Length: 421
Image (cartoon, rainbow, N blue to C red):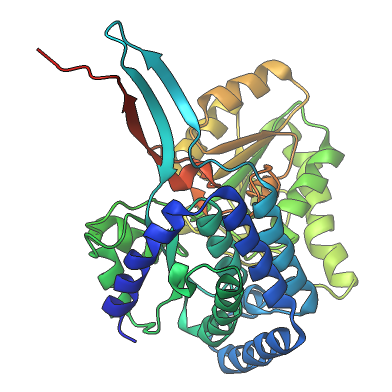
């Protein structure tokens, strides 16, 4: 089926979603979750995933294969995410503001679905179910365009969810997967005026830049995460080591993983050897992949590592690589972050409340942490259910995108015969 044909059927399906009440949409979500877990559907998903993994091995980094991998536990997690979306408060029809005018007109600013939401993403099959769940819950039809490395897996997931939609009496074309994984289909989505009401790219910097530069439909800038953690002179250093270790190594291939560590010069001599032991020596002794440290001149005077190049502080590694820079103050840390960050997630480790307040006020990112890992930037963790993406812009959404961000609003005005004179 061509991309244009898929867009046409998604546009036709959106009316059914607009008219479906909360109960009907929730029923559809539960049927979608149940369908993923049916033994024959789960077996097909795993078989197609095994094929995708085999084909991708050697062509993408090993750390990225983890994002592509599915097992039964992850499929159950996908189903749980769909059910969690069903349990969330319905944003559709919510009255955001209401005013009664002197002439008796009642004006209600009311949340309504976007219509058709298109999502371009790469090698993460779980995005398929997350995006579909949030779209259906918020009354939107969705058009999914996954990466070629995961297409067979995504196709099996979508087919299972479409069966669930049909069982609930909803059109299967409420959830659609683009069959063409070339750049041509991405360009078609970017320029699908009259068909796509919102485009959300989830992936690397190249994909996001292409969408922002070429899209003629409304587009949300998401995803790229050059996330920083600043270890202040007033930090609890053991806490700082734990936080940096989690933010860098728990899952380095995701956008909320740390890429840069800034360390105050007053504690660099004590902290950096502690960090080196945790990220490098200890991991190597335990048979785990050590983190490659890319060090500025001051850090290199304290611990061993690779000299940092200029690009190392502007790179989303998505790997076991961490750039380290020594700074002379919180002000220098803030200045560096605002100059090099992609606006995703940043953290400060400090016991000084005044410095923490200065950091959270001055750092211009979607999520700013005090004494916590950047890995928490996630729609599920924030209580939004599964997420559609992490917006790094300021209009119309910022941070993890949940149901509210998939709605726009209209004014509904009720009168009793008023005319304007």
